[in-house]
Amino acid sequence: MLSGLRNRLKRHSSQENEDPFREDVDSRRKSRRPRNTAFRQQRLKSWQPILTPRTVLPLLFLLTVVCVPIGLAFIITTYNIQKVEVNYSKCNELAQSSYKDIPKKYYGVHFKSKKESSMQWKYDDNVCTIKFNITNDIKSSIYLYYKLTNFYQNHRKYVESYDWDQLRGEAVSKGALSSDCGKMRIRDNKIVYPCGLVANSLFNDTFSNLTGVSGTDDYKFSASGIAWKTDLGLYKRTKYNISDIVPPQNWYKAYPDGYTEGDLDALAKNERFMNWMRTAALPSFLKLYGINSKDVLKKGTYEVQIQMNYPVTIFGGTKAFVLSTSSVIGGRNMGLGICYIIVGAIAIFFMLAFLVKHVFTKKRLNRAFLDDLGGEGLANASNGEQTARAIL
Image (cartoon, rainbow, N blue to C red; front, side, top):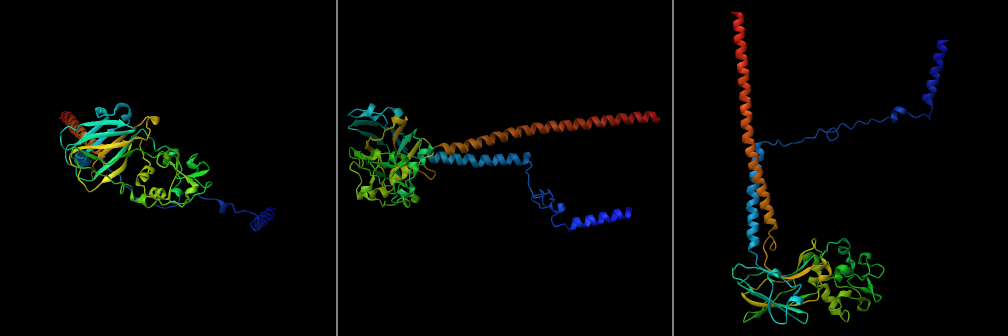
């Protein structure tokens, strides 16, 4: 009977093994153990610094020795930059038709000479004329900037509001214009060139060359060589027909009758326009307007005439005329040097704090160690005396 049962079980098992539709459970079973590699098994070589006084204190001292001299060098280099800055936003309100002293809060000067520089302005027919003194000769290169404050060129909708294909010279059709230009794509059933908020808000105040007063020679600035070299290759002469395009709405003073062929040629090479299209990262910024890399600016009295076209009250900002030299680290800005000195000061402070803590902690540890040794020695001596007495 038992042998018959065994035969049935064998036949049943052999049939199951021969069944082609039966899945092999063991072959489907997968191991969740990671592969035996150095990365998966976390056997890679590692290094962990051990922070001891012998390593931390010299590193902090080295950081101080490196940062403080660099910070001082930056500050001295920046301090030697000579600069004239005049905030002329309220020239039309505060100035008169004859020269009047500018309130000190609206201008700042820094020259190598310690002589005081007078600053005056007058306003007539939308032109603000500023008269100032240069107290010492200034070697080239000399840069002419305009400065805007509280103007957020970094706003997301603003910074994207242009069409690069247009700027590269392509004749982009109405339907293919970038949607980021918004409502500033079509005007009077014509294509706006260049379209978008960035181009429409182009800074349009104009600065004259410096006119010498009382026998001082004039000083001229050039608008060539002020843009980034990479930008010079991006902007091309447009392929649009003049009849198909109109200037942006806020450019009507510059192009009251629309574009001409010469205007389109000039716009493709307008480096001031290129500088404006390179949007700033901060709400207060400088844009290069002109440069003189050859001539020395002689000491004397100069005038500059500013055609005031650009409104700044609508966004609560200001605009300024800036005349400045430069250095290997840029313009007159103490921030970088001050940061280096602060880092060096923090390093020397923590170095001294850790050193004092280490000295006092070491003394305590030594005393505790000696006290422990003294306690153990007395205990052993007393135990020895008791043992001797017991033996005696």
